[in-house]
Length: 71
Ligand code: SF4
View 1 (tube, rainbow, N blue to C red):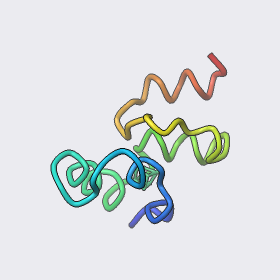
View 2: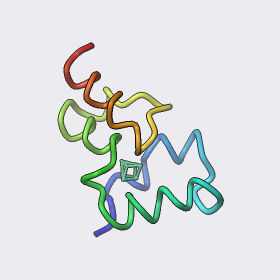
View 3: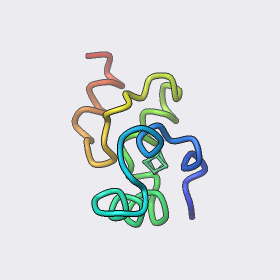
């Protein structure tokens, strides 16, 4: 199921072209396949979207854990 945050996801809006290269791979693997594995999605749904750093990549799970832990 597609991620409902895609249209407004700062990661794509500001950092990475969504249709090419890495952006396309992330989009396939996370945004269109399993958003629940996306580090951005996890932080957004746990703490709120305002706590998601612009440069947090979908695969940065360790960083996401630290953000959630408040470190
Ligand atoms: S990067 Fe994560 S939060 Fe952003 S649209 Fe994709 S799955 Fe959703």
